Image (cartoon, rainbow, N blue to C red; front, side):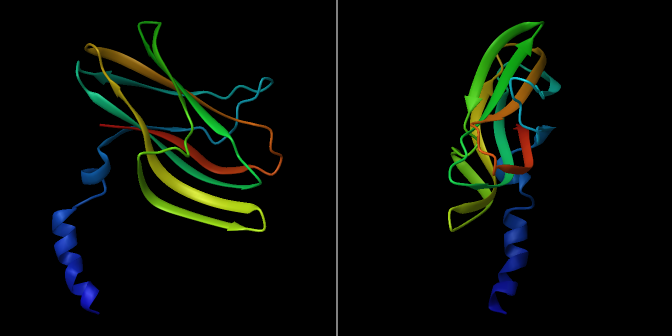
Length: 152
């Protein structure tokens, strides 16, 4: 009961998750794994200013047996020129929110939202972020949700 008294105070200090993680600019749903035979890419174009810091966050919900080696590849493109390629392991994050993970008999159930990298915008303009998700062969891997969040 006592903890309920602190709730209004916490709401004043942190009015939203956005205050902690940044304003969401785009969300790319890449729930389907890309393979050599089946390529699934999502993209978003943002008008950005020189010096803007864009944080790349992954939001995952998955289950697997053994190991699951995932890679999220993100290309940053401006005026049809590739500016940067990120090859991220979404499970390697430097900030994590809303993480739950259970392991039982070699089976892992894992969901989280985590910050993986940052991109500094070199000049004003329209930037396209293109993302795919790949994984090493694991027939037990089930991706229930995989999203790339672009935040500022």
